[in-house]
Length: 206
Image (cartoon, rainbow, N blue to C red):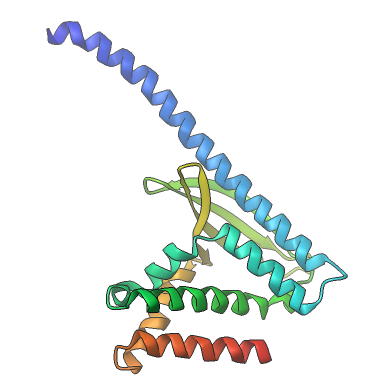
């Protein structure tokens, strides 16, 4: 019986393995195209001579919400404190977290001077994530900056779940910073929310 089944199992493996490889290659290409398009759209925003500081923030906010899985990132960043937060606090936190990240990046818009995103390659990262490696190339001769985008391809949807600049994770950096704030606030998630709101207002006013 085993001898009879063995050829059938081998045929199955012959067909399944290429199908899995094709699916993996397709997901990697999808992730690569996704990041390339994000880079092009961001550069178009920053290169627009008619853009105002506020229109740049508004356009980037829309792009950020479309491309980043802010719920997944925000929940990871909050860590064990997520379970301690009420449903209302979770929603308030996610709202101000999105605004905090947008305003943080918006403060760097003035530093743009023709840099380009150059894709270096892709590789699997876990069961449903793809790591897209890239470099930010400066036409003025500054050393290139290595950027790795962790992209989740799931149910036909593509979202960014982390960004690593020179091997430093955005999500882990925020997680450590927010945990420190919560500890200073006596373990209060409400204290973190208030601190983030204050920081957002300060960045808007600067």
